[in-house]
Length: 303
Image (cartoon, rainbow, N blue to C red; front, side, top):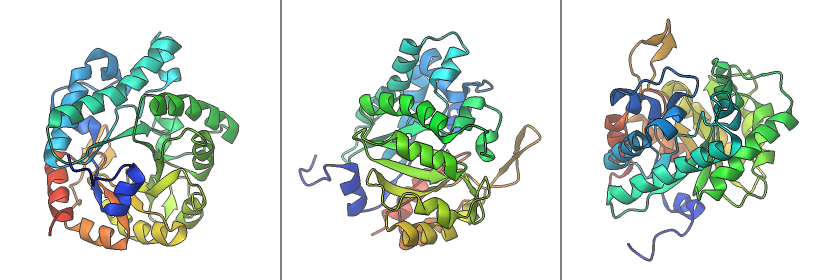
């Protein structure tokens, strides 16, 4: 590898645009794994870890630079409901980083590959869809305590960056920003949004403004939203915070009646405009697979 490559994740963002992976769950389901479980993909951290390595590998092969770990729904509380004690739960959460790192080793590519430790919202642990509503009725202090435990494990396991992702409201954002203080690992913060507001209804300008002076945050933006919502959010995030922007929307299909309906509206051609607006981390979320990530990588590496 070249000695000139960036030595930190923040430096890599300054050097150019990085390609994120796509949805972990859809890739696992495409490989035949049943995720109809409250732990979702986190169940496979113990049951079938090699499946997670294979999913990461598929995205690295498609051109992703960054793998987001399968820890979105991996929490001490969620594992406890399955009779898994705190020590073993910490091992499983940390193992999500090791699995992504193993995929990076096996990928055999010359470019630098990064591992982002996923810190999903409190609502993901509840497994009732409340991450798309926010306003859990839980105070900021309790949310901070909940998140800090996972943050410490993922940071200790060697994640290059922490992905504070699918955040539905500003209360949880405040709690997350407090939880990452002093952990020594950079983070990005991405909201799930509907139009110009968080899922809980707060203006995005207010939501993005929370990170403006937070040194730990190296990028801010949106994920798990409609592709059409990304463009306006990119410009706003860049203007309000002065930081690089992260975007990874869903395919454009919508969840309803127990399944996905509609059609994909995520076009790789959209990413040119996102990059011009300030996006430096670009990928996909639900229903975005390796084929789309390959197209995104192709566009971002043109020239």
